[in-house]
Amino acid sequence: MESSTTESHIASDLLVFIVGISGSGKDTIMRKASDNLFIEQIPVNILQRNITRIPDKTEESLYISEEEFLLKKSREEYALFWNVYNNWYGCPRTLLEAPLQRGEVILVNVSRNILYEAREKYPASKIVLIDVPINIAEKRIKNRGRETDYLLNERKIRMYDKIDMLPPDKVVQNDGDIEKAVDELTNYLKKLYLEFKQKNGSDQ
Image (cartoon, rainbow, N blue to C red):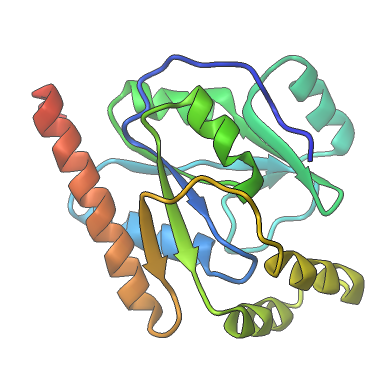
């Protein structure tokens, strides 16, 4: 997997990387938790990634051509990027770092493989793992009907890969009632934000 390497020294206390196998429900849980925090007037953003495939309706992603992606990559416009299943995924630097400069929570759905690099670039960032039994995840990705039989099999194989990744700061279980998982993530992000405010004496 090819990824980015440029370092950043921006304060990253409110940067939260969301990871989990395909079918773990990352995008849905992120969106619902974000809605909950909005009601509580806690500023939170879900980063809109650039990807070179048509995004699923639950994703905060923008399709761009591979040619355009590689051009942006060459201009170092991505804070992080990776290639998996022959598709490029990129996190626009401005969309990732601007909310942090405003003292807002930013959620980013990333590949597990990129966590070491992400933590190196953003040392105070947090990692949240959305955990789900593999049999439930398999059923979800089959039901969403996005993948061809070949890609579906590739995703299933990847589910069983023992990826060397940094230990998460928080594990959210999504093996039953999704609202329970949403509440768990909501409460974690709220605590993170309030602790940041207290530590920095901020009125944000």
